[in-house]
Amino acid sequence: MNPPWFHLPFLFSSIRPLLLAIASGLLITLSFPKADLSFLAWIALIPLLVALEGQSPRNAFKLGLLCGSVAYAGLLYWVIIVMTEYGHLPLFAGIPLWLLLSGWLALFCGAAAWASALGERFGIKSALIFPLAWVAADYLRSFLLTGFPWTMLGHSQYRLLPLIQLSDITGVFGITALIVLANVVLYRIIRALAGAEVPYPAKSAVILVLALTGTLGYGFMRLNTPPPPSPPLKVALIQGNIDQSVKWSPAFRETTLDIYTNLSRQAAARQQPDLIVWPESAAPFFFQENSPASDRIRNLARELKTHLLFGSPAMELRNNRPANLNSAFLLGPDGNELGRSDKVHLVPFGEYVPLARLLPFVTKLVHGIGDFVPGNEIRPLNAGATPLGVLVCYEAIFPELARAYVNVGSRVLVNITNDAWFGRSSAPYQHLSISAFRAVETRTPLIRAANTGITSIIDQNGHIKGMTSLFKEAVMLGEVPPGTADSPYLSIGDLFAQACLGLTLLLLLYCRRRSAGSSNNLPDHKTP
Image (cartoon, rainbow, N blue to C red; front, side, top):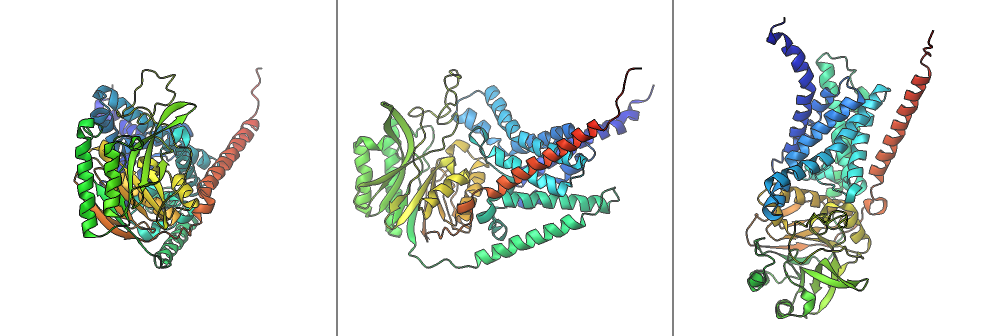
């Protein structure tokens, strides 16, 4: 009988791919805020690529799934805070939901690894198939089951301004493709130098160098191109820091209005703004009801002689039944309502319950005024001569919405949000980093007013000009030139990602035909 230590080398070789996949997942997590070690994204996939060596497509899928599960479990740990502290679910229910969401997103990592392993089996180089498949998977998760394009690899580079200017052509997907290609090239170089049977990736290395040079050259050109002179919009962004536990309490309504009124007066005393912005649901009542609370807000706009944009629920009749909307109202300097913008992409299980008839036992996490319905129209709100496109809360993570608002004439994007749900986690920082890409993609500045932070101003090149602290009252003042909207992305949308998806499908079809041909060429085994 062999001693126990005799089996250790075999045991290590069995778990080695698992450990490498886990290492890649951890490196991906550390690439994003709060750790914000964005340089790790450029090497994060190397352990996974080592783990995939010689693996069958099925095993490659499992390793990719493990990598993605670790990455998203680390990135989305704040889901437990949302579910338990604010959704009032017990911990034993919140943890499985967090793991379920992480696992869903990890499926796309697994799919990319599977496609790469299948392609390599039939002679398609990983430098081609892996970046294509990764972008294709990211694109699919951006819209499947309502979509959740949160923390894609490209988002980790939000502070590297020369690099992310490419987003006005390819969206964030182009940055992701570069990162994945760099990982593949570096992996093959390291393995070749280490003496492994991996050919030195000369061609793909040249392609990577040319792609990075072209991307950075384009980025510096964009950054050094001054926008045409136009009168800036003077803005005051108000962060009220209203505790989530009392936000919807009628007893706290007057206190809430006192906080926003006083902060707005402070802002007006420091610099006469053209526009004051309050966050999502800053007015936690139906502004349309013409109550004394509504009159207070109108009178404040008259007093300060400025445009005032604020979040408040709205109601309208749909099919002769009242329906609630999560909305933003814009008042003119005379206190009259100039328009309303309704949230069109709602949060599943936060603002409505998907398939509610089939899931009667599921309740919303958000308790306030009941289920919301999505808005029917995307239209700008005009603050004087400046059209505003309003993105409510997590609408800012969807590039197609920002693109739609700019295409109908918006020249400043406004993101009103309530990130109190996230607690003191990394989620508000992740949310902000994703929002920066909306400005670059559309060449339109984005101003952000958050209930508890992070309130910020982002110019049309993605430069974040100031960040407020979490869970503090704050006022942010700034001058925002309207965007130029001279972005190819506005016309072509996600054509780059769609092309990656199409090419991936064609390569997989090629592999299938090769596989079928190989099967047909096998000799028949007849029973003697």
